Length: 422
Image (cartoon, rainbow, N blue to C red; front, side, top):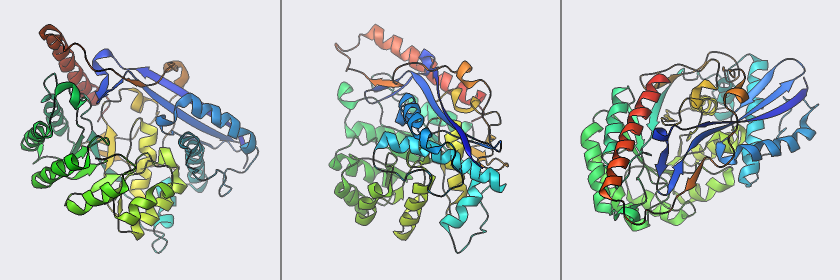
């Protein structure tokens, strides 16, 4: 078998104004999706979705360069794609090709990719069965404004619990300095959230690396008291010592690592005991590097629970890794991505009652919908941007307008989720 062509698609869909999402100083106007297709002379093709964080046009540009050395070679050849190097954009492009090659390997073997991963993860149990149903956690909390009824995040969580999700991850809202938000005020919101859904859902907090260590410790102690499930990336991502101190001081797990593209990035945190849970993304690091990270995490007694964001094809790829892990893990699902998330797939897996059913077919078990570039033409520009603080402070009239828009936006997110089966 020989590679005959490699394509990279750049897809976009604008968010309706009421479905734009935001967090801290960042506002997102559209959904983007890169897709990689590797074709062979035997009619077997492999597909993948590398992380959008790699910038789809730059991913396509790099893949065009790589393609010159890959066309004509055997897609089953070991180490065909270079392991992660530490250059984030290059590593994400490499991951796109490598994940497509895993799809080809699975199809050639007549097995799901998860089945190929099991002997790599547990060589002493090469035939260990994979999971056929993966529990999802609703990843959200990116549409509440501290100047405009922040309790809307609780409405969102209740709505997601009503839709069958058993776990929810929230974030810490718009930039605190804009609204004079204190840790104490935020802790009040956490307590209200716990009272509202704590008996129905596991609750996780994403810090987005926005806390100082003293603040994170204060928040973490309350999360322990309230029984939350984990505290994700509370500090600057490079602060190994701070993470280690937090992980030692708190009962709930400290997690991180989603933007790391290689084992070398995780190693200082593993050695320092700075994570209880390691969160990689195969769309960032690729599957071969993910396996290396998973094995090393296991040696250090650290659980691996992949992070997942953006669209359905990458969700399926991360799901295959979770299905093959020797321990239970939940799969992140961003509930505000919009229709692009799943309609890129011709045969999207069933999502019901907060779970994803693993596809039955070989490889990833899914295929691309037709005419994607016609349906979702690329929209130039970044998928979001940093915004300036409001100045002067919004008038009462503007506050009412913003409140109305947020209410419509929240309703739209809930409805979009229902229409997409999540």
